[in-house]
Amino acid sequence: MLFKFSVVFITLLVVSGIVLAKEGEPYCITNTFMDFGSPLVQKPMPNPGPPPDPDVGDSWDWYLWYFSGGPPHYEIKPCTVRGKGEHCYIIVDDEEWNVSIFQSDVDAIMDYFDNESVGEYPDMGIYDLNTTNFGEPPDSDGLSRIFLVWYDIDVADGFFWWFDQYPDGEYDYASNECDCVYMDCVDSDPGGEYMNAVCAHEFQHMIHWRWDKDEDAWVDEGCAELAMWLFGHPDTISGFNGNPDDCLTSWNGYYSDYVKVYLWTLYLFEHYGEYAGNALINTLVHEPANSIQGVNNALDDVGVEEDFVDIFKDWVVANYLDDISIYEGQYGYETENLPHFHEYKTWDEYPTDWHNSTLNHWAGEYVKFISNGLWYNLLLEFNGADSTEYALRTIWMDGDSSIQVVDMELNDSNDGELNIPDFGYDYQTVIMVPEGIASSGSTGYSYSADAGGEYITLKSFSAENADDGIVLKWVVASNEQFKGFNLYRTPLIDSQSHSLDKVNTT
Image (tube, rainbow, N blue to C red; front, side, top):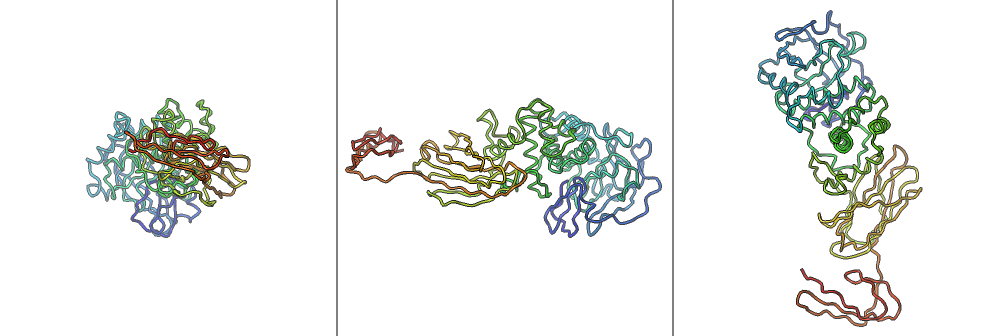
């Protein structure tokens, strides 16, 4: 599931979790790899699969798959059992033994798989972490251990090949007839934390395939990313935070796709799942319905009142704020520290013109309004396309000392407005957060911001020094009733002298 950035390909292909690159960019199309051509025809082995009771030192021929330079093709190569743990066999391509992978690596791999990890649950290995949170793996070979097959994979750090779950010859793609995942032993330390996190990622795919063979890629990959977090070495958060207008339910295999589904699944896990005492993620893996419907069914099954839309709206705000000290932790992550999420647009002069933009389905973005030291009533207006659904949230911020999250109510035409009083005094910054909460329809919207006010004529004005500040006094020239505001937004009435409280110059 994790790609090597250095490889450049013209051919596109994806196995469950394997990522190939096109012209240097990661690209993944789960469960549609056969659309890109059949494998090269080769004669199958006469007796594929492991012996009845493999032990350390046993060797037999394996189909090892390669994807570079054309259709997928295998080589039949001898591989040997180099380690046998409680829950795993460590299989190594004979060509790589004591070249790129050594006995010390095998010992570390077995220990990580069976006994320990480096994250929140250090006394649990990959097998127990994954089976507890996702479910039991298949046992197609009846051997009750998982084969971890290490060789020089030409395009990926690892993958799960579901054809191995069927007898060789049943599909065009050959089968090793056992429960196995394939791991690269060349480009990264096979005994290190990263590659074993990848192993957890691939093992999740095996488990997910057993329980829901046709799950949407974004759900499956999100769970696989969570497996890396459970092990204690999640992917670095980058890419997605620089361009958050990225549909959650659309999977293209870019690194940013891995990050967005990781954050979504971690948010579910922390707020509604196993971390919060509910078996949500395990239920989701076992839920036969797919995508959003599967998430909603799983939430309902574990007794969560919120649905996908409710949680999605909170998640978009949480990605920006990541602050568990407010709103009972609703808008943050307890176990991750997120980098800053990029604002699509920043405004500091008002009024703005109506600004047109687009927003992907099941995505959010952030528009920033700053006061620049001036004090206004800020009026935000929003007009979304009628053929889809939007949610509009705003974040009112006065540094880190005061934060409010306020919804803008939208009518049936996706139009709405919201007035923010004391903008520039109580709140120095406002973030507008449009969110696409539908799977179809136009993606266009527009908005404007106006700092309302009226010009007045003063009959007199004075500023006097005081011990701890300045006292301002003025007289309005007209006797007409006037609704204006002084520096503290106190209404001015008629043409009377009005004295401010002392203003601290600091």
